[in-house]
Length: 120
Ligand SMILES: [Zn+2]
Image (cartoon, rainbow, N blue to C red):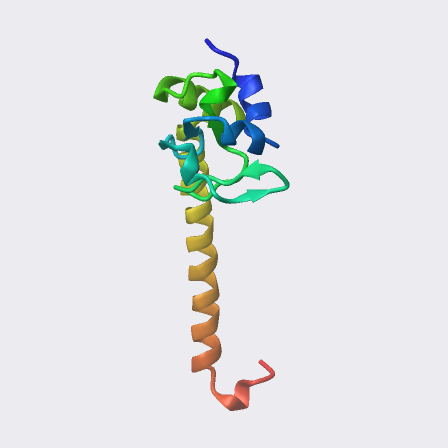
């Protein structure tokens, strides 16, 4: 397996390398696009033109492969396995739903409580 550690180095402070690349890829969204599509940099680190992730773009001048298998390996290494992210998102959603439900129930009690029971 090619070096997923060095992909991180090539995704940061990589403006010079992007400028001499033909194609770039993003290990955030797995898109492959011409290097000329990358127009946004912050302190010489590229933003992905597809998903607007930061420090996830590597150019082919890095001599790293830009194929899906490698991008997924880098994604799993530096961002996290997709099934783990999906699980996190599901849990966050469940918590947000529970909190929202609880809050809105309280809100409804407040609303239906008559003014003379203000002090409970
Ligand atoms: Zn992207």
